[in-house]
Length: 156
Image 1 (cartoon, rainbow, N blue to C red):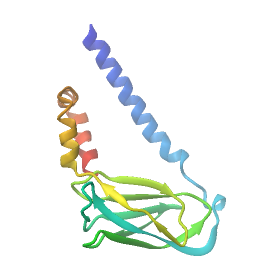
Image 2 (tube, rainbow, N blue to C red):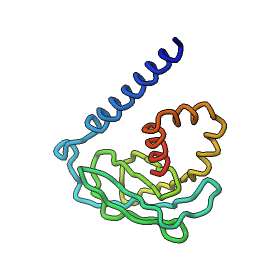
Image 3 (cartoon, rainbow, N blue to C red):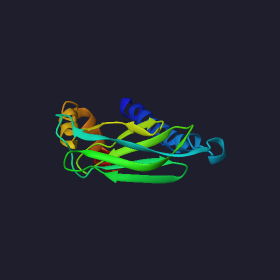
């Protein structure tokens, strides 16, 4: 009896999560006319480090605005500089990712030289954290599709 209630609750929770994910991006979309550009360009720059403070080379930093992407890669010192981002009166989305690390996201306004440092957590650290929750992992393994999705999310 309790297994059925748990399964129904789990299925309902998954459905709610998928609904939130599918609705959220459409409500966050800004119209270009609502957010006119000032005619000037700005930069997003900073460093990408791991949780121990070591620079991460080759991480991709992507800035999304008005259905457009600008990107750059971090160098051997972890430094990146995404250039020629239109300055407007709106918030832009910035993502930093690298295989083997959890993707980080930030919403920010871009000005002439906006500085943001990313700190990425390795997926090995995430697995160590999950080892403290064997029940969670064992439940995920009973649902192969969810376990596969969980693994894919960790790599992004």
